[in-house]
Length: 456
Image 1 (spheres, one colour):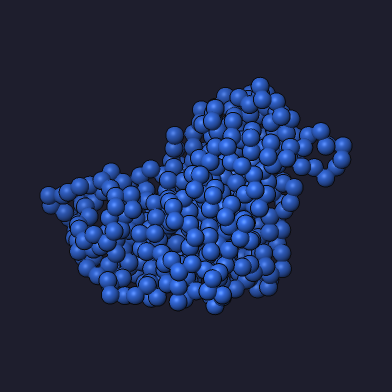
Image 2 (cartoon, rainbow, N blue to C red; image 1 turned 60 degrees about the vertical axis):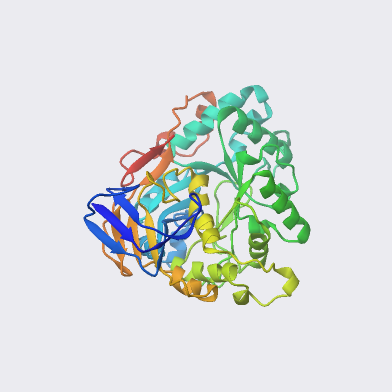
């Protein structure tokens, strides 16, 4: 269908469109520069027109979340898809897929309707320990990582623990500290076209970053626990590292009342799916202090309800009068603009995930477009009320939400991953032989999932 969206105010940082009132044209699933005869005209008078949202850290399919669903702490997978679409999102990225849980995670992602999905492969560097110490074996390491990425159908690599550490003293010869690990990862990035997401920590911030663009720092706000670490985080961002904020959720904890639910993902420490309520001020201070393009929006834990969790954060960023009552010197007076919001929730997440045709409204982009009822006279203090729920959502040119109602519950969706064409070497066989289940059962079969999209 050919669609013309008219009368709206377009916000697109990639093109420098800051509330420019102009028409937007869609032909099939793509945005085009013009149309002769549209089949449908959508009036966007009084509305803002932005790209579809992309959640960089939508923890929606992590192994163990179904336990929390039994306690009514989380919506169902079907409800999550509807909630994301209603909030104006078209893509959700799961951060915690492992070799053991790849099949499980993809089954969960396939059951989420409406939104496209992708996942990060969490690396356990203990699988590679001695290989990482031998620089002449880095090519074998790189080929193995690419093979694992392809077989698990993941989009990128994530490190919860950028080190090799054992509790048993007789494995001490296999240990690798964080500084040395970052050096090795930098070489892998430079020589073999790899990029890594690191869960941020004070230890990571205190170390030099020899190749900033090889790394993305996740939940950076959580690592900024004092002024010195804030300055280090700002320095890393100035050097070219990208990061996401990792706001602590403003929503109350599950009925488990903050009791930990720890999942063993194979690392040195387990992952807590239900952490105690955290302090969102570090992430807020970081967001307001950073003036550059490298900081994306994210939450620090599992998403319970996008319609409820995201708007308060928008308010805190966009209007200083809505921020928590703290000493005035603790928070900058800066206020996010709508352009800042679009960049942090759409444009930059698309860049980080490598979704080149998303996050902007230029001709050739996929027609993922969200319209929000936000008349120009509405002050920033009230933006959250309007930006929390979209009036109209188009995904690949198909209308999903219209007048706040879901009109296309069967909208096609896909899972994105990278095909690497890597060679399977002896290291891959060595890693697999220590698994408690057969290697072929670790990989994700073609028929699992509704549709696959390969990225280069």
